[in-house]
Length: 330
Image 1 (cartoon, rainbow, N blue to C red):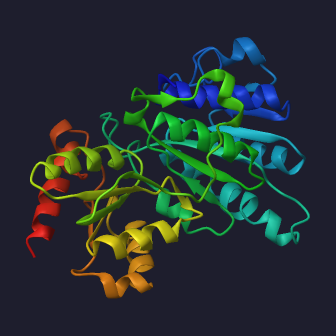
Image 2: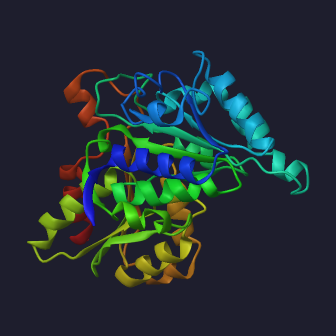
């Protein structure tokens, strides 16, 4: 193992898959010489050239539409959106075309494409560039939704997403790009594939389960460490993929601890947390619960530009810590 950043892990995954399969290409705004809005594709145009690192017009509808068409003809395009918020401009191409094509043609065709979507708050980018909209995509049959939290997971899940024969929306929380973590050495990278639909227990525990994903995994782990000093053993389950969802791991953890806190950065109303609560209470885990399942989510507000208000609008290590303490006292 060596340590690289989350951004480097994503770049390695794309580059390795492009070397492996000439049908893989990258499309997006400023992804060539500039290296993308967050520098993730920096240096790739020098290796793969302008035909496979395709600079596009400023039109998300055109980018995703072109990718969907390319995927239908046998290529495996990767789209980089500058911000996940801009997926709204490409919803017809993604939701009505890419997601439904395989079903409408009875499985005769496929749309193997990945939409990489930098998401979430914390960069001072304000309301139109800081949302967490993964629940929108989870609501659409035909789309797979991936939300990795570590460099290890980001690389393995992106490689699996590129090889998948269905459209995948790959959410990357922007504050994770500089996060460093262990990733297999390059000579073992070809085999570093993490299957979609398999959660990971990042920390074992017996007193309470935190079910979460993305950046909230790191905050939950930090809170769990503090709680451990008080004798409270928290289990942290990282979903990694929302669609397909690893219901078994969620249910098993809930049965094991009897107390569950669902944490996500997205707003509470209509958020994916509601689906997670339903997964638990509609299962055999319900009889093992010793208290109601609780959600800790972002407030139902546009993300503010003000730094202090922005931090207050989403869960923090402190709010996770205090919420768990409150649940343990019941």
